[in-house]
Amino acid sequence: MLTLTIDEQEVTVPEGKTLLDAARGIGVDIPIICYHDATTSNGLCRICVVDVNKSRLLQPACITACQNGSTVETHNERVRHSRRTILEMLNSAVDLHQAPALQDMMKDYEADAARFPDAKRREQPLYDDNPFYIRDYSQCVLCWRCVQVCAEDAQYTFALTLGGRGFDTHVTTMFDIPMPESPCVFCGQCVGVCPTGALKPKIEFGLEQGHSLEEIRQMTRRPRRRKPDSEEG
Ligand code: SF4
Ligand code: FES
Image (cartoon, rainbow, N blue to C red; front, side, top):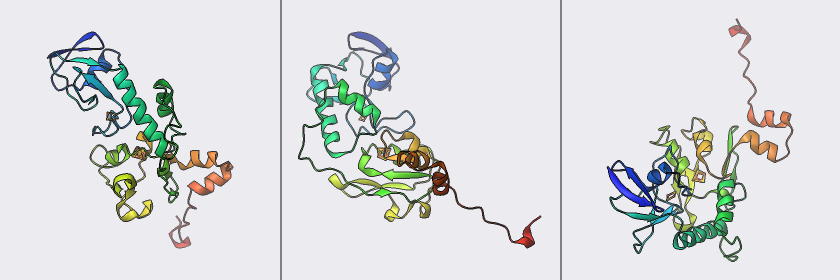
C-alpha cells in the first residue's frame, strides 16, 4: 500500500492505482475527457492534469500511478490555468455546442470561448450512411473512446480507425468506406461512449432536424423482404 496527500487529505491506496482513482476514492473530482471507465486510458486530452510535488510538468491523473509520499494538488491556479487553456483551444477548433460536460467545464474554469478567434476550425462532412447513427466529426474531440471500444476494449470489431495527420487527424473507417461496408455490427457502443454530439442515434438526429415520426421510421427502417409465395408457410 502507498500513502500520499491529495488536496491536503491523506489517502492510502494499493500500488498501481492512478491519481484519478485515488482522488475519486476520497471524493475529489478531477475533470476528464478522453478517459472512460470502460476504455484504456491513453492520456490524450490532458484535461485531468494535476500538480505533483510542484514538479516542472503537470501530470495527467488518469494515467499517472500514485507514488508513496507524494503531495498532489488537483485544483491550484497552475492546474486551473492549464485546463482553461486546453478548453479554449479545443473550443476554438471543434464545435462543442452538443457536449454538455465540456460546456460545464468551460464555465467551471472560466474559459474564454473567444480567446482564439482566428483559429482554424476542424470542419468535417456529416456522415449519414446507415439507418442507426450519424457521424458528425466536426464535433469530435479525438478522445479515441469510440475507436477503442470498437477494438480491444469491448467489441473486437475494428470498424473504426484514425486517418490523416496532425491537425487533419480524424476518426474514419478503413479506406474511408461507408459504415455498412465496414465490419461494423452497429452495436452502438461507440455512440454510448462519445462525450460530444459527434456520434448520435439516427432517431435523435431526425427529431433534431424536425422530421416527423413517420419520416424517422422511413429513415431508420428497411422494408421487410417478402418471402416468395412458394416459401410462405
Ligand atoms: S467520435 Fe466521439 S468518441 Fe469518437 S473520438 Fe470523436 S469525440 Fe471521441
Ligand atoms: S482524461 Fe486524462 S488525459 Fe484525458
